Image (cartoon, rainbow over all chains, first blue to last red; front, top):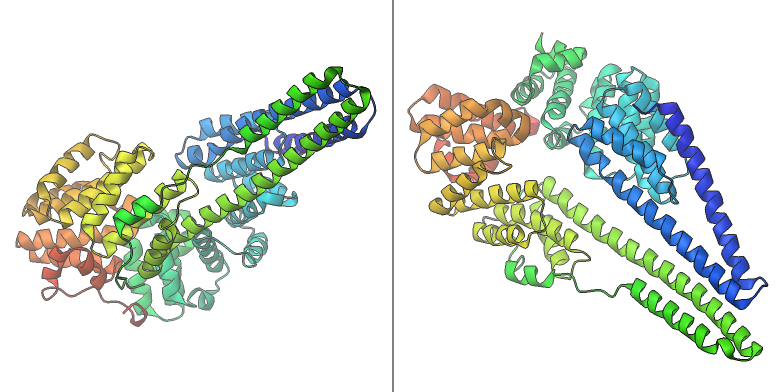
Length: 263
Length: 294
């Protein structure tokens, strides 16, 4: 299993190396164009640099292709294969920063799927500290991972900070759904019942688009809020929907606070 | 989130034709050609006077820089165009998921009326076209689009299985019962075997063809996976099974199933999806809902 700290260090070191190499190649190319020396030597030098660049780019593209397979492997529950894939990407040299940053994100995703919350949070934080450039959209799923991992670790304040940052971003529909589920979980933990019922039907309609277990958990959380606020009709309706979507006992084991809805 | 059928749009034959991507020139070949020409010129003038060789070397250097700059600009432009295409198709997907059917229909018509940037984006957009057409009740068009995608060969096996299920569902809606039955038999041998979507399809066929006992048997066997894989769309299975119990004269079970169906989805929506379920309208009451959900 890839150790988190050394992986982060290795990724940082490789990115610095690739920046240095790119700068060196750029300077060498400039020297070939404007510098002295024989014409043929300059042409050969330029062609050599171009060929080396193309070779490095092709290798990096291969790494990028390998890295792209990791999310589907994680989604399919093939964790060992995903781990191997990520390890390969981390160890291979890449000319491009995004390949390495993506590998870091995939490792955070994998650790989250493995319920290793602490490691997932460390990786997500390390990634968010980097200059993401063209990969800026990656900051949103990373923040979602961070918020969820911190909530699982009962770090409510840390989760709040991540959620607050997400509210300043323009999110895609899957991200909106993910954020809503996390936010309902967070609000349950801090007993923010009234805010959970703001635009409740809009939230319920969004919850219908979530995977069944998450949809059930989110509706149970809103049901609990309704009960706390004396809205028994709404609480009963949401509880009955949750019962049809998942094994309630299992849900209560994972989220003990929600068990109150069935007492 | 209700659908109003837009008229005069989503003509399937036209959209299948107009959305085909246009062949594009690969700039790498042009670059290669320019480099080759420049190298040939260098060899040819190898014996020329020193001033000419110097001028040619400078020209060659400029050519390399200009070509790299042009290639970089072209790459940036292409990536932006591709990203915009991805974003547009992603937005269409979100509209379909949010069941904002009229907007989804308009966006799909607009997107598919022009050549797509890539085949992958076109296939994705056509995959979204199926549910929109189904929502508009144009099941023959659904069959045409999904047959096109299945025969196209660009969709992965699990995607093909999902398309075959959608097409078989459309066949049942259009009363092409023989074709649907054959499609279900084929699906049982493929990657969709044992899936909740296939179970729902079989339940619908059995209700439609008057075999309620078989529908109930499948439902009882598959209830855990119907719940785990379909989520709120398990409402469809509950609604159909309510009709199956009704056909069997098991009123109490029909009432419970109808209540469960209407807990998970609005009754109007269920009636719209399955004409067979409408027959229960005057018999059973939907599940009580709070005022917000009414």
